[in-house]
Image: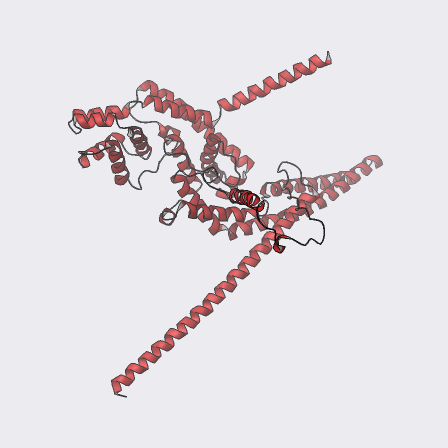
Length: 485
């Protein structure tokens, strides 16, 4: 009987979990945007063919050119580019007509590739998507039924975007606070903060991106026009750095080095404790208020037993307040160290984010290591090669190592702890130790930079003095020649 009850309870719990997950999936940004994007794809199927047929009917394309375009494998890429131009605010039919009529297509091996190149060249720097809300993703010129269906999907996506913006503000998520600053108290400023965070939160849910240190991750492929437009809008909303001419001249390897440099800086970063700091503030105020209330009630009551209990409660609240104050001081130390680290690594972070943006534009996902050989791979291959050669190599004195004691085990990696668990004394000490180590690292780097700057200043001063002496000598020599000496 008990087993049957437990089994039914387990089945009910599973069914409830399934229903809750189905509800979340039905209301997720991923579902709304995927439906919107799929609907747009279906609604615009054959649109490029209609554009080309119209140009052929107006004799702007010859029958042979129209036939060649129909058979060109690059036609799909051309259609995706026209969709990108539309999301950037251009009229795709006019863009295509300009590309067709600007120069002859005679002799083109792949006319679709030629048109693709002409459009990209003509609209260089003008292909960034510009949308105010998700209804801007809907193409113009669709029939009324499609327009109405897509508008409902876009409204659902915008509703979800606003919900996520509010949720992000309530949770004060680390990625949002570090990108936009603390959640404002002013209602108008908070509304703007939520609007900007909402775009990023929508894309994060769409891409299933959960990093707390990288707000958006890599840009989606260029062929995913709607998702790329949302990523670009979120990128602008967070005011993240964009790549420029300098990044465009770097190789993939050089860009990866910049990303890796920031990853090394992350290794000695103090813990992010802003949420815990805020929570501790609230707890401290509450316990102090409890102590004051219970003390006042103890003084006002005439019952000795009640007075004793209230005094004990007030004393316990004072003890808790003292403990929370100590914890608050430690968290403030860690938070200040985090702020100092964040400011100290600003240049490295900016270069890394610009490098990420450039790599994403090249279609390179820097977080995926499938396309590159890591140091561990090289080391493993090297050891494997050595182990084969060692079977046939003569042993020399240099191969014999003197050991004066047992081998020492590598130190265990210190866990940063569970962010959802209450802090223990050990995790607190670890956080303080990391903060102190970070401050020491910053001081050491600043001292090193100052020493380098001093050396450069001295070298520059010596160079200027040498140039001045040379100029004076040349002047004197010229004067002597002028006087005939």
